Image (tube, rainbow, N blue to C red; front, side, top):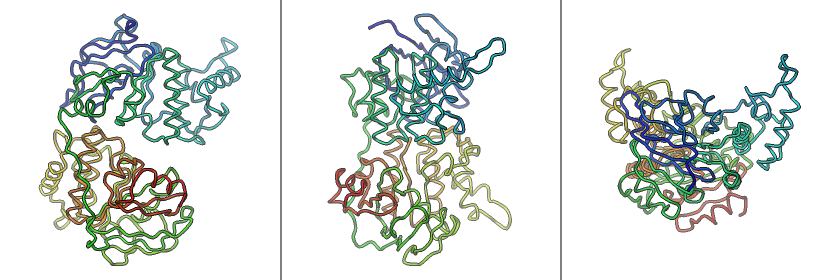
Length: 499
């Protein structure tokens, strides 16, 4: 193999209370796709941020083209041909495609007047869009693009910087299958042109499909490296967690359980194209599947009182309830884990204790005072029950891994002992170990007679945890499948509107 494009040797990085990266070695070669995987908190993002100039290592060295370099800033990384495409895309939505691609690096003309050369920007943007096989005008506003198109614009930005090493952090987390396939085609094209792609993902099936080599991190250390012919799901999982995962066993539906959530003739403005009717029983997991725009999240938001309804009734434990606000929903025994935990599920600037106890503070009041010791005792118990990995309950929730953040959101609602739990993408962006733990937690809640409605874009997940599956297409329920009827083809037929 040719000499490495970039090599990191014995990299260390510490943050308060954690050794995030511990003596990690990694090499990157031109014309390859290397996947970096590991549980949340394994050190993947920190290691990549060191390479991209966001963080400085406490020890170790980085070599580019065989020479030791320092990368004190993102600008220096860019000069060295390193680009980082974050999971949360870094685009200005109110600017055009061309303005985003060349933002801060606009070609100039008429020196020393240094006017921006708009014509050159447009010409070069057209060339980049052609490379990406993206049929867009350079003058299109980014806010009018799909997530998949925005992802391509981020890659276009990297190409405009002549990047030789492109780091992609969870690049498919918000993409449709078609957009994912298109991204993979582009990755292969970039690879054939000499670019090194670093692919960070929790989706091990994608890693198996696209990676030439896999580096596995665990607890900030190298856990192992797999060559192309060694890449299997079991090998990756074993290196990530250091043991075999407990297998989730599909339970049998108990038909004797009573209806806990009943939705009758629900009509939601600008969404439903037919009244919505369904029931979730206590001790049952009902999966809800649909393609982008089907209206699954909007339906859950309407049940939880976030979204307005025109007509229809909702019953909880056979009692008709008015769920006009989240507070009314909570009082009726309904809880919701939202799709975007950082925006809608957490106060990321606050600590774990405050986040877990926020919706149940009235339970800890005495006169007008909060019983702090009880708050702390309940929080510690929830942290222990859900295996939330923190050093203490006053850790800022914003610094936790995705899996631990998701468990904080779950703990917040479970502390209220809800009768109905709405889960919107419960394992999105969490590592394989946290996903397994969340599945076990769902099983535990079911054993406690909680009625669970789970919305997921992951077909494998839907098939794995559901007793029944409801399918939506363009604002209406197109079908219901019992456990014995469940398979991917049947679900996708209904999700595309075929009865």
